[in-house]
Image (cartoon, rainbow, N blue to C red; front, side):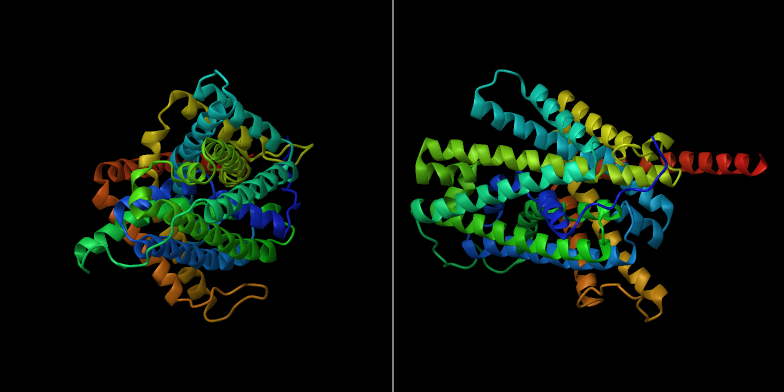
Length: 447
């Protein structure tokens, strides 16, 4: 192990694939049904997905500027640390390890295992298959960022092709048509606003993940250029894919049929090609989930690496492999943590706490742009991309994140409280590590 620097080996295509790979998992194959249960007309359903896409694009603009201001390893962790305080950044990394990334990866790994067994007929239980997938991807990422990114890019291209094939086959062979009227399923009222709020929660969850590309900024050849472009093109590409999926689901199944099924992608392909179509989309979903896992193991360990380099986590987590230049201990930590959760089977409970915690961190990170702009005093350093429409678009993004958190509190108060309690557990842990860092620094100064 060494204390050297991360190797800059990634370009704009890698950045775009990492952005898209962090968003597209299994959610788009399931969440259209969840949205259709909350709102019941094509206008409202597509409106929710379009609004989610606009929100994600606003976030991409904001993160694009933050990335050009602070193009180092850790991304969002770095932005929070420099804008507010190391404690805020640490709590974000703490929750990433305990809840958002680890729980999400465990859930997606078990989803992969379910579809893998369905496709192959393999007799092992879901936990063991999930563990094998997670540990295999962990081993690949330990070979270096180039190896991990290449695998992630291939899987992203394959899942984009699977989604495009589903859309094309559904439009041509699935039958049905979209009835544009009525526009609303109820009069304009607080009830309609509440329903749209409930619809936006799964939409926001499905669009989440683009921010994780910032974690590997320290390994991009030109992070100011590559990450900002990757965020824009990656999010835009996913918005197109997601809207296309919802259009074909509405055409083939209709709003009522979409709400009635828990597996809309399979229902569309079954309508178009029978059971053979359902099997094909199962292969596509398996590839998509595997690609999401690959992206998570590639990106999140760079946050734990940055925490360790700041003296706020185990020192070995901040070491790099002398041979591959990868933060191997951080990668193994993430892979093993997700594997344990997948085997124990507590990932569903963990996911229930994720949305509110995630969107609090989104709001804080976006608000950091106000902090940096104020510090600039009206001047902008060379090479810094400026988010269009700031401060209005940034304020809109922060307000939308706050609205999603409020909607989550209203709809799932118990889970939200537990999520906030997990977040607060990071404070005493931070105090321990910060005191330890000060003691070590004092001891080094005396010697």
